[in-house]
Image (tube, rainbow, N blue to C red; front, side):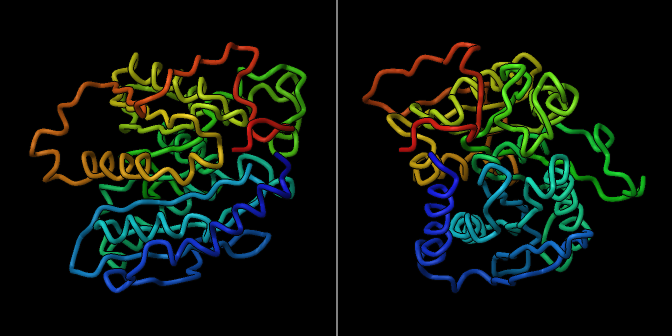
Amino acid sequence: MTLSRLALILGLVASLGMSAFGDESKVEIIRDRTYIERDSGPLHLDLYLPKGKGPFPGVLVVHGGAWRIGSKTQLAAVAMSMAKNGYSTAAISYRLAPQDKFPAQIYDCQAAVRWMRTHATELKLDPSRIGGLGYSAGGHLVALLGTLDDDDFREEGVPADAPSARLQAVMAGGAPCDFRMLPANSSGLAYWLGGTLAEKSDLYRIASPASFITPDDPPMFFFHGQTDMIVPVGSPKRMVEQLASAGVPSEFFMIKNSGHILAMFDVPALKQSLAFADKHLKPLAQAAGDAVAPPTTVTEQPDAADAATPPAATAPTPLDGGGNDQ
């Protein structure tokens, strides 16, 4: 799939997203709040706040687009749905490649989480309960937010006493999780990482959520299209296996007969994401016993044969020149 075609599809998502979830009366929407000033200009987020006193758990919603296209409106319908289900939700725009290469994108996501905690009272937010939800590049970024400790890869100038950027739950769709498995001389991500794996091995490591897995990571839920040829399904599957080995609660939901784009619209996967958020971010759900689920759960939609995990030669290659564009 070409980037221009992807941009068109994501534009349709943005234009239709707000109407897709109907009645907005239960949600207060505040648009274009600045969460940080960068040399290239201010970065904005849209807030979707439940009506009521709170405090509510929070969710950071992060758009996809190969780290080079997209905006905070792309997943507006998802953000609205989370707010209607009792989450103080912030959907962000972040700096894009190739003008701003990694780590600009993860620094912006961390800044947004810190902003949410700083403004917790205004957002009716419980700052101890913030999750991240994203798709594609956004799924990668929330997964990386999940595994990074505050001091793992700290942005220069962030004070030592700044609020934490750590998440308490991750819901990631279509997410590439380990760039260290790419062919050493592939230039597919050079626009974002500044070179090939052979040339920028440390940066490819730092960009990989899998490289920071530790037992204290938050619970993580991954959903993925079975026939995704842009980000092969083996990438999040391996991530879930590694999380399980570290003792981190994790779940994987396979979307049958779905490629990278169709998976973004899958209602059962989004419902599973919400259920996962409820289980780990809402204390009453945990008190009811949901928190004692086994560390790793793999769920697949019925009525189709399982997809084979791609071999190492087809490791995650997000938007690097083709693939299944369902």
